[in-house]
Image (cartoon, rainbow, N blue to C red; front, side, top):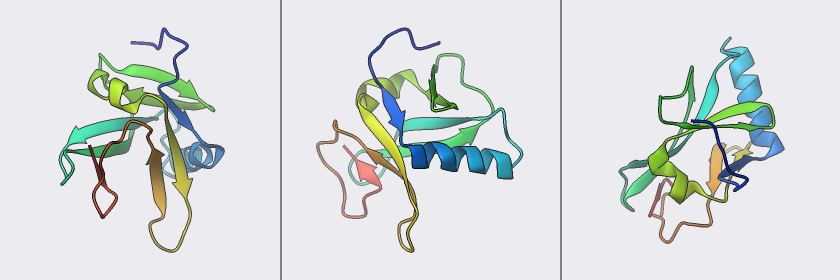
Length: 114
């Protein structure tokens, strides 16, 4: 399912988009996209799902963000609305970080949200 609304679901920072493109290039997966969403689990009910995937699932929302295909499951859309995915390049906690205005609770480790 292609995005049919002007409503912003997820945006990528320049750093995140560039990191995804670099990973796709390095792993020779140029036609892949980035899956972003939530899955049940963790101590605060949900955990973020961020992964490279070859193609969307049949009911995914497919976005194009800064030259990166982004796949989001229908179950994740409402929770992810207005979120920004960034990439942190630090000695500790390096990786993708989701800044989500919908989060009401999070755990101490920062990997689980509710």
